[in-house]
View 1 (cartoon, rainbow over the protein chains, first blue to last red):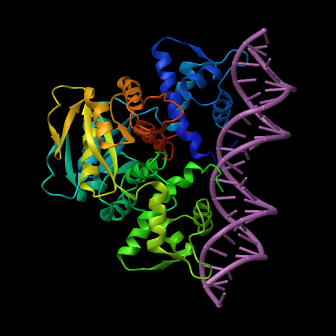
View 2 (cartoon, rainbow over the protein chains, first blue to last red):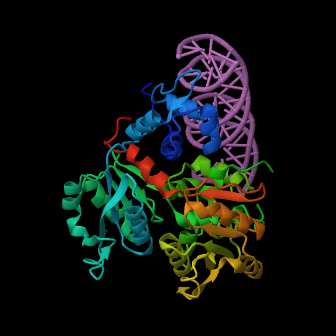
View 3 (tube, chains in turn green, red, blue, brown):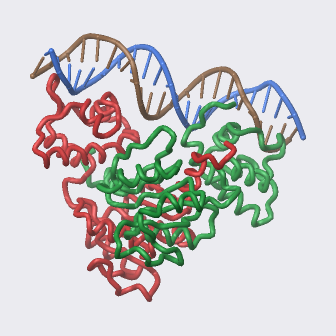
Length: 209
Length: 209
DNA sequence: AATTGTGAAACACTTCACAGCC
DNA sequence: GGCTGTGAAGTGTTTCACAATT
């Protein structure tokens, strides 16, 4: 125990959670790792190993209690309370992410939107007003947000990242195609749509690889 | 040679390409793997190993010619010509992706948008008309698209994936939170925003992990 | 002299196989 | 008997270290 947990493991937990919540809703009380494997596409050993990083949640000969395991995973991820997120960038992508997040009634939710374009400020995305960057620190404090999403152009992204770090944000999801540098204490996850599209092209017949 | 190339390697190629194109634009002609490492954040050995999957593109004692290497990588990925992509789903996210793709003048470009909602059909996103699903096969043939993006709700995603496969699409970027099943010949890449957000929460101080 | 290209070593993750427990 | 939890084996990826080359 207490060893560092691989990122890939953390990425699978939400998948388990989704299946488990589904089962709880259907009043299924017990599930085996083999059945979970079938629902998720991961192997049963992998699922057992993943969970073993955090403890022994199952019963030998029986399986896992869906509700208990769901609660455990929520606790591990920190989803046992509302998770407020701030979004910076109210362009096409930012606006889409905001609407997506606000309409789903998930635990993780965008609670504030920032932009530096004064034409956008004061306008609303699904009831949440777009605020100026100057308000960032104050809003982060008020909402207790520890997470942020960057959806601004590449040139502006580093400045935004630095401001987020300064405001006390601990984890950033970056959609800009920029290599950001943040301090040790800040976790950075990049989603680069251009990379995704360009690498996808490799897997079609239109290449020489 | 001729061995299967890891996905992680393919994902790094667009990063190299971006840096190289930047350098070409700045009239930098030669770059070492160490400098590339500095620009990309990957290690120099990793860069050399990645490129070695495809051939020997550098000159010992010198480095890599930026323009040549850029062309090589474009060839490997299949970006040495326009790459047409079809998008299914003209909701918030789909529309944002479409605008994003059409405004950047990149090699990979969304050339057609489909939706099943007849209220949306006929409307335009940046000059591209939203068309009904019934036109899919015809448009895929016309445009020669081998790639597709799914940006529809989870419940509709499998049906869309099957239609794309039937239409001859070879690689799919799936933004829906659904576990899709496609044939051997179709490459599937998932981007699940809920998973990204939920796993991000682990890296904040609001969890018990 | 400098930098690539690459076997070998190290590290990380997954799968195997079965002991342990209900 | 059935299923979890886990060491051991296997596989895949990264880093090391250096011979090959300009």
